[in-house]
Length: 219
Image 1 (cartoon, rainbow, N blue to C red):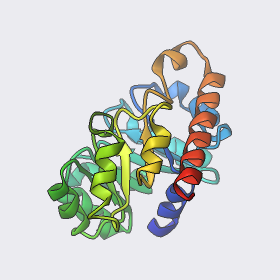
Image 2: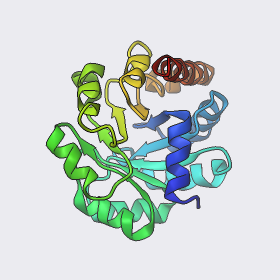
Image 3: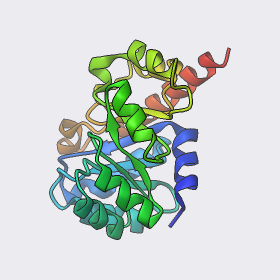
């Protein structure tokens, strides 16, 4: 298993975390192939998905040379430990979960707790995490993230919730370290229809968008 610094660097470099949610196990391999072919190097399986832990095990077993695999919607310590034992190399929560962070620290796993307000962001950072999930980013907008980065430039913020191709570049230009992308990338309608090539195309488009946003922010 890669260590948390290596996982962080992979996420920092590629800047796209694909969120798999609500799919079935039989479609997982095709989804994984499409995402990796599109240039995605980090995949999160939401634990709201049936058989999510089995999915994490399968992705790690088949794609560990290509991607880092994480667990999302981790709300407590017990669930965090189960995800770690399944092979997840990073954990995300929609909220600030001290127990989740505690388990991650214990096992040397990258913890990405969720926050919305400046107070929550600082509280998460003071727990010793390496990144904080800004949620729901789409409702808050790139300008909100930019305002947070003003007094908190040291905090690595990952924008999640409502991220689309239309606003991806703006979030990166505003200072997001990475983006967590769910249905705008792994759309269940496409999965049901077997349109995995379209998922690959979307993955490539998001990778290109964050690259363009990163280049724009460096000018």
